[in-house]
Image (cartoon, rainbow, N blue to C red):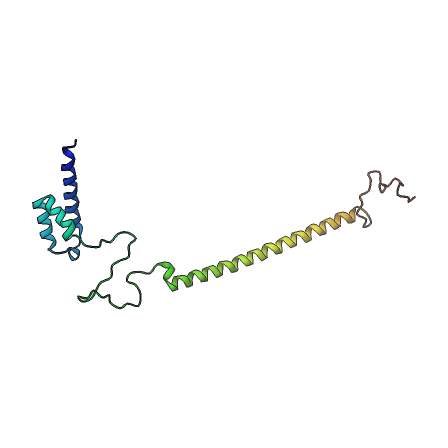
Length: 165
């Protein structure tokens, strides 16, 4: 197993370098043309692969989440003047998108206020109906007196309160 491990490692490095070279755009390859690098990697096996990794591979690879490279001008490498970064804006940086969100939020807030007011009005109406119903029931039970009458028709008092009828 240990005798096979170096061969597998060299094969892995060679295969990685070859695939990396093939997939690298021509404009990003350093020092030699892309086809020359492919030939060197194929002919010299591991030596060409290691040379590719250190001498031909782009110095800075774009990785997911890394900022995009901007084109440079001239030999000084100075960036061209721009009023905004290259590439599309994120939604949180787009003023028009934020305006639409704000408009939508204001509309939703207005609708919620209307619904809340409508619910409050319904609750008050229900309370009024219950109060009227209670008043009618109280009115049926006597002459405005809210004390219920006993089943035998008397007012339920036994004369203990000092009043004689």
